[in-house]
Length: 351
Ligand code: COI
Image (cartoon, rainbow, N blue to C red; front, side, top):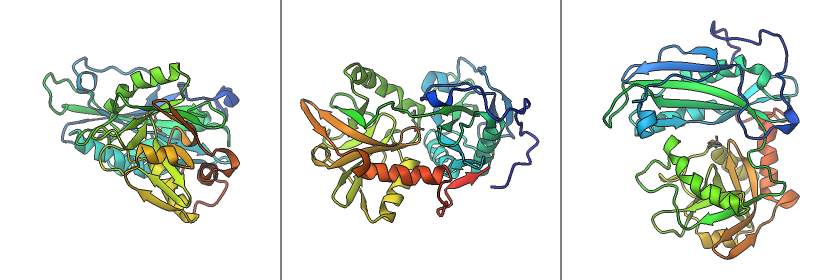
């Protein structure tokens, strides 16, 4: 991508290279930055040119469909600083496309791909000093598309807001060797014909109860089973899951109840590149319990080994560490993202 010549582009006025952040202590918690991006449109029209404005609270009608009916989508992507101080964003076009798919499902108006990518670029460059030093984390970018115009009945909103805010982040899960997952056999995350396959805001609050319960028992996260049979694994609360057995890497198919993760897709490609057979198919809970290795992928989690899975009273331990495929794939992916190896796949948008 060429450097921005947008008049909306703001740069650090103080001239400091970095914001005052303890980079070594980054986790996944909001650190408010200087600016955010906001664009609005009337239903059925195109988004006007957005603005970079100071980061802060927004004003919204109490009668907006996002507040009343959950008509909203979000995305998550990351910007990285390379050792030679360039800023790169991982596959922003893919997030733009996913937002368009979700918008179609929720009868919302979505920004064009060009507008989405340009908005990401402007927001990142306006907050450049918040992009962590190379190797210390990333700038998490959170685009939101919400039904913001007032309407009392259940119908498409008369106005939409497209907003992007950012926060420097480190690891999503602060665990050393791997995740300890609890398989939920009571609640489900998604069902066929629902919204599990899009990044709807409404997919996330229903998992919180399960997550809180699991965390209070010492687990790192929750794995959900399919709602139709309760026999197949689907997704962890915020990420996709893979299993490894021999030379075969398997992950549940994106047939409507699984989020089509961009990291999921990228990791499948990298695994194929190094000779693994990658299968997208139903994966039963029994297969997971018999696998040699399991790992999770997502923008926030990146690639994270699963150390244990607990299903009812059964607890299974998996390969982690240097021997694990997930360690290799994590290294391959982050080397591309941080500019340590050549990006032969054209995945990185260079700002
Ligand atoms: C992401 O990885 O971007 C996510 O959507 C996770 C988020 C819900 C914390």
